[in-house]
Length: 537
Image 1 (cartoon, rainbow, N blue to C red):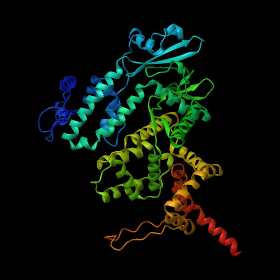
Image 2: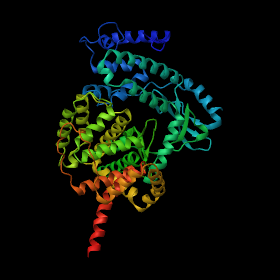
Image 3: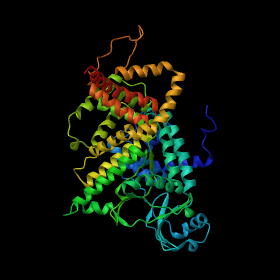
Image 4: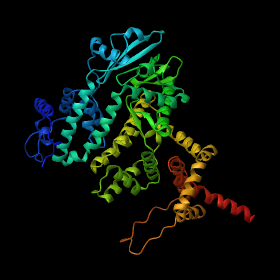
């Protein structure tokens, strides 16, 4: 029995009919059947069309469909290589609107005549995309600026297209188990949130200034904004004078250009990795068109329409995964992947075996010979085999890392972004467990331990025993284990202590007690042994 929400409105029915006609023109009636847009048995074998035909369809459907295709191009955990390659050809470039079409939006957003704010305003745009286009201008005081203006009517178009896409996704999920596996509701929710941020030009300005404040001590610049002329439909920002990195890439093969390109690669990689590891908010589209080398040699990032956020909870899950991979603990790797995908009907033993084989392929390999794209490609293939999916925010993080690796490898083919991350991770460790870091966390830790002691004195006693003995006491009730488990690999105490130390340092930022217990478990046994040896002398 259908609900009112299931019944499309008159406008949506018209647009659905138009969509079916367009799909027919592209030879995609089989796909329309599989999506539930045409009557018939969708489980029967049908011609779903080639990736190229689907890409042509998305171009015809307009900006929201193109942006959705661009998002899907980043989801190698969901789609095969041939689909990713085809979707990656989608570009968010559109025919610029004439100035006369934009002028009413500019006037309404500024609240005054253009001549009152700008001494000069170029009528021809310097860039145009589906959401906004960019014009060069000069303020009344002579400052050169860039004016980004949202295209008129785009908000209504995006809202209508998103409603239509959600309806199609619900229909498709009901008709196709394969599409249900893609978790279209979660994917579209993340897509809608990203579009909403991109539509709000004041949100872009705020993100740019926030991340820019983090990047500034690293010698990386971002544009400043003139907040009197910033709103949802317009933002006015500083025009940075520099050379786009695309020009450096063009010169990278020439004599004398290699050293400069390598220097840019190093500074760029440091900026991207530190945004992710330390800041938690990062530029999610750091491609060569959004990076400049300024006249004074500083690096600059522009266009913060796409911003990624790595929440504390997600950061802890990533830490768990990294420690599990480093310790070759495939069971824990499996646990994290299944938690992320939300799947339960999976052959865990087979997945464990395949993960163990995958990790073994890189055991003992030279870092410079390993590309993140290669590692991620193999992991994504495994996820597709077992019909597992990554959370959209994590997929965005991996996409950003792949963009960064592709960027630096083009600038400097021998660049090793994984090795570049190692000293940054060590710096994070020193910050978390050094005197300043411990002092910052001391008050929170004391308060947390006080609350914990009042609520659960047994847990505090357990922490004390762990710290003294370096062992974690575990009791099993009779009958709790139905069959003897496989014996784990014998752990190297030094490796275990190092793992506990790193995990505790990272987790202490968000979970004082857990982090402190882990660090104490790593450090105190060695300290106790040293103290005991001194006493025996």
